Image (cartoon, rainbow, N blue to C red):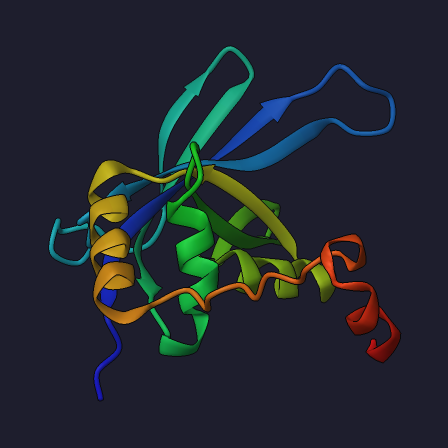
Length: 161
């Protein structure tokens, strides 16, 4: 069965720092939906900005994949006020490069538990609609069992618990 996938590009940013321990800071600053570099005639990453100590690189040809067993993580993300795309990245030849993307809180948490560099960026509306539609069609939250406080129980029933 084919997994749902959404093509995006990742924008990584480098800021120069005035710090004696670290000269620069890298971070993802966004994802661009429906972006495939090969289709756009581009191969590999390219610099899109270099001004005032800030450099931005565009990394095309990334995908967000949805997995059926991550439904709760997607649901938790799209039901928040500020949904995110989580980007796992590493330094590669002096430049930060995105590796994997997810929209699951749980998957991103596992990556962080494994000591991966993971940053969150705002989820674009097109990605939100796609993930939200998938969640609506494929995930139902488990009903929560309400546990009666002991004070609401009849005294005879309290002895049994």
